[in-house]
Image 1: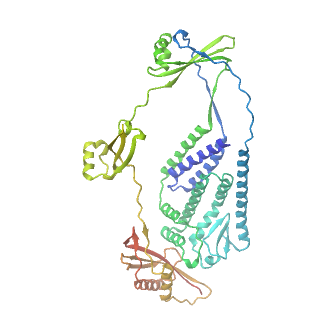
Image 2: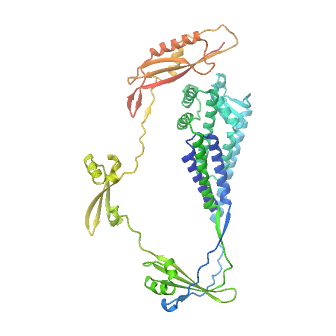
Image 3: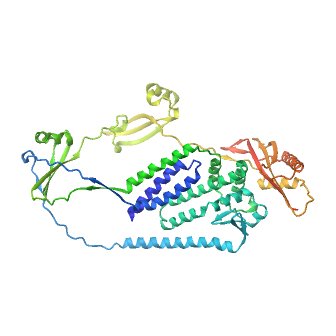
Length: 550
């Protein structure tokens, strides 16, 4: 069982490594979904599969060597081992009982979580919607799906939820992403001790979001608007108290993938590159090479004799071919002589020479520490180089250091003790790659927060009136402006949201846009954006929705 778990973990780790190395950053989400699920299945099945390959055993030559050329040999008599006393390993039973207990608890929790979705569905309003079922919850929360059900807040639905969000959740339903999650959760229940399964779940769910985003962009054809919507949902106003499930780091990845392009040739090449990795795993763990040979004769005795280099001449005279093929001057070997009887009852002697020592591997002469033992070293200090010192180093050794930067090379000082005397040496080497430094950026902020800005705009606007009855009016706009280093609002503009059906009428839209620009022109100073603590200019695009009920 332990060998199976270890092999399965190796399969999971290597295939997940291949996914992040080759596939995760490319726009081929359907293949990625297939690859991740297949990796889980293969990691469960392949460790159980053994593919035997039979090869013919190589016959060892029989070599007769005169005894007088050898040292004294010792015949090892055959011995019979005493039967082992079986011991009861109580720790194994305790470990098994603990494993079963944990699996039982997780299985119960898994079942209760599934039942909870259906209990929530039963106790709330249910509506049919494009082949799916909308479950309207009394509490506010972002939409999420389970099987064919889309759960969302009733208030969010009544305020005319953005169609992009519904398209996103419908993609989860139609592509049956819940089945993938249930599968990985079931594996986590059984193999709860394997952390790789938690990494697979994260990769699978991230790919689900990519697939749903692709469906939204394909239907609505407006990436910037959808990105603004995701940002709005990722940091919802506190007034709505939404329990957001959108992770900002995942949102950044989704934004990058929305504009990513992968050619068919590159996709096919990367997909094909996963095949040799899988084949290598099969070759390493599932293929077993077995030698086919005739039945071994009964062994009567085994003689072991150390064979030193000084005896090579004697062996060469008897069998020079063996010396040229297997023995090298300056190395020591152990000679194994096996005497057995063949099928006719004749004695057969077999001799083998096994290397027991060889010359030490040459030390790296480029390393000045090669002659210093670790226990002699007292301190090691890495120092920065000055420009003049670096220039001299490049001039003296252009092959190694030319093209390097001042910060690519480091000087190492070593203090060590030699025969009671404290000595020092220094040498230069290429510094390992330094980690990328990421700037910390904070967004510009309206006094009191973005919700206060929305409230001030609504208080200052004169909303249009309509005579039609029985129908609500809704329009969406985008308010854009720059904020300079001092927090002043500059370059104000506004426009109708590009999505179809997002406006009132050309005359009313022109009036609303004019009002938005005038209101923002009177805006107080913002807290400017900062990069690494320094004030910087920034740009803002704020979506604005007006909903007038008849």
